[in-house]
Image 1 (cartoon, one colour):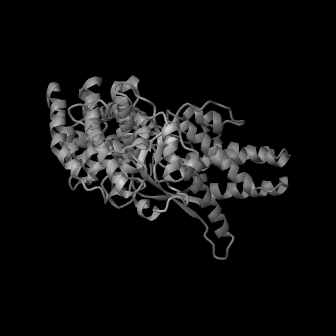
Image 2: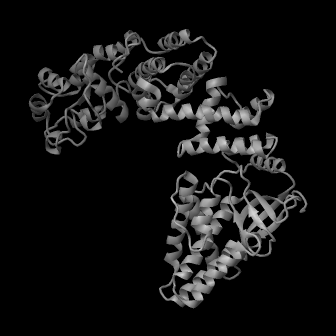
Image 3: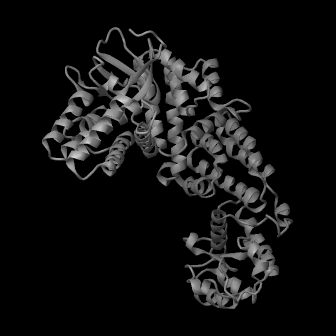
Length: 564
């Protein structure tokens, strides 16, 4: 047994080659292969950079890849568990498989022998099988597609499998780019790459006696400034609390499902939204510390916390996906609020509401939030940053409130915080008020156009229907461009059309555009614009904004939010 915490210099060849009597095993509870394109490309660039530096005078002998954490249990001779470092060893093995297959593809006796040597001394070992054994998620897929010679084509079903396939594609392409067309020269280049990866890439191997010791190391590294992500830190902490391998495996299963579901979405933000939806703002404590102290103070079992997080994540993802089959009539409103308008601050409140309420009540909450956001941030241009405390407090409060009081409580709070009808009507028409961002403009104008069109029938409107009356690229017909340009995205300067104008008409002066609105548009909004205005200037932009205000107050009405 190696001395605990006594770091030793190890090359990749030391771990995957014959000098280590046994195989390197990733524990079953560890996450799957998680390196993406940028990580694999960085790994390759490190190799290329080192290769160039070694050719210079006084160049380095080794390249440091960072620390790894290993454990060699007394009761499992021939097994070294890799507790931190599997991504580097797995990627190195993928690269070895690329060198093996490209050498064999040279169709020379020497190339075939080289490929066999890589397979027999770095990918497999006599008496032990494969040198590296991945965790439960990836083990069989990695064996088939990477470690087997020749590789076996297998469908990638999960994210980690797709990552393995992508890593091999990237490395294959990169190695091909540095190979000569001459087989003999190419074999020398492959041999040089093998030497670098096997011998010159060095890691500081830190042995531990138990998995708990490993998790303490991870936390210490984070305290010293080598920051891990909050999900990784929290997982390490939960693993350290786990009583046995069975519990660790269960935690890993919950966590893998959660991370797989989140995909490219921010898992740290999700964990933050869980926290604030239950306990309020973080104040001056970082998220990981807050979660850790809560778990410890409440004596929450690690497995129970992971299970609860997984369930919350499923509901959170339903909100982000915004599918009617999952969240009913709330779907289009939540999609608009979160995905179109980007109002993420509402997610903790929506998460609490989704946990407690039926779909119909969730839809009411979503509509009320749309009324609020439109009044507060889109029209009044008030700073939304101060709203977090309101939303967080509501998210926490409704988790302990009786169901019949939740929607009234949310409505009452939002009405108190939102600008009133009188305040909206009194807003100045210049400055930032009524200047809309593109997605806000599409949302607002589509709702107003539908309100004008029919009291009962919705029509499909999107970005292609949005029209600037004074255009982005005005023709010479616009003699007042300097006055109107700052108001390009003003509410009064926007309308909806049935279809996009062609460029010639779209950039023309108002007279030509007005004629088009009157004759060709199927929307009442554009037809009314043509009827009411004979010319277009700043005074008319203001006039039209005032003309639209009664509709604004009708659509974004807390007492009747059916048109949002």
